[in-house]
Image (spheres, rainbow, N blue to C red):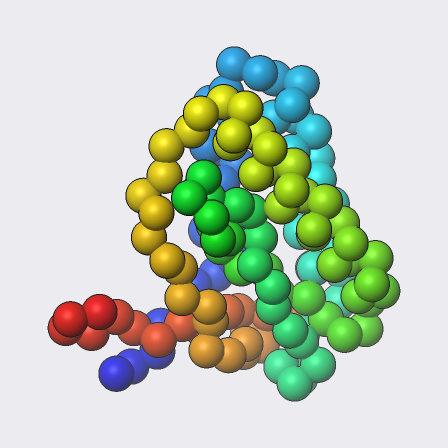
Amino acid sequence: MKPFKVNFYVYIVVLGSLLSCSSDDVQTDDLEEQLNTLVALSESVTCIDSNDWQFAGIGSKPCGGPTGYIAYSNAIDTVDFLSRLAAYNEAVRAYNESNGLPSDCALLNPPTRIECEDGKAVLVYQEPGPGN
């Protein structure tokens, strides 16, 4: 099976549009601010060597599990980043629960690796094949 690449920006656009559809503007504004901070931290380092990068689950589906993945460089304060990420994921989980949001409950496979393209970290996923 051939891997396929997903730019993190696609995920951000989708998640951002979902959050902006809520009637609870204060809470969604806070979630969006937290997400923007995480993205800014993630993008604060130029990707030159993919071995210097890791990824983690981001967001929270109502049925459990992340809604996507975010790459981050080992050059940033990873303790701070992962702490902010955990707080964001918990805030999304609480938001989903308090608003009774539905979910597809599908498990999201993690990326197989990270590649550097034009200075940006790109998450690479295994392309789903027949029966996947």
